[in-house]
Image (tube, rainbow, N blue to C red; front, side, top):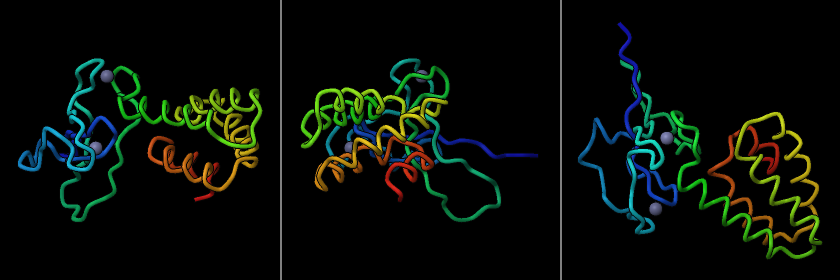
Length: 162
Ligand SMILES: [Zn+2]
Ligand SMILES: [Zn+2]
């Protein structure tokens, strides 16, 4: 019998994973995040489904990494932390030195495609890298820290090389 199952995750509004095993280890649950003070969620705010947490595999000891999902697997809506990070990345796009207005708009558009895995993601990666070459080191690093948690590992490696 296969007893593998997803636990439920408790994640704060800003994407900090408070407890990736909120069902099996509810003692570690918190109403508010101890890193940023924001309220925590165990359900998708759009459809009410439980947020998928740690994947339990019987007999396997040791903890694999858990990262907060960017979108709800049930309704497809972005989670609050995905929306917050996208908004921050858009605001940063307006602050970056060395870009003209077209480049800023183009950069903002590519952000939405980078967080989703679609055929346009590859195009967005190319555009993103081309535009980000023009910005200074500080801007580049700020953008990297905002996007790192919400893009897939593949996208992260392609656009930031790490
Ligand atoms: Zn937090
Ligand atoms: Zn949902």
